[in-house]
Amino acid sequence: MSINDSILNSVGLTDKNIKFLISDDGNFNELVTIGDNQHQALRYRATLTTVPEHCPQCGVLLSD
Image: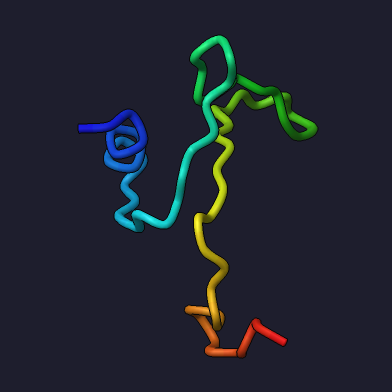
C-alpha cells in the first residue's frame, strides 16, 4: 500500500483522485494553531490529480 493510500485510509477518504503532498523531509501533515481559542489541529495538504467536470454537491458544470 502506498503512503498516499495509507493517508487516505487514515483520514477516511476513498477518492483516489486526491494526492497528498509530502514535504522534502517526509512529512505529510503539520500541527497548527488556529482560531481565537488557539486550538491545535493537524493540517494536511493535498491536490487533485484531475480537474472535476462538475461539482459533486450541486452538479454545476466547472469546465468553461
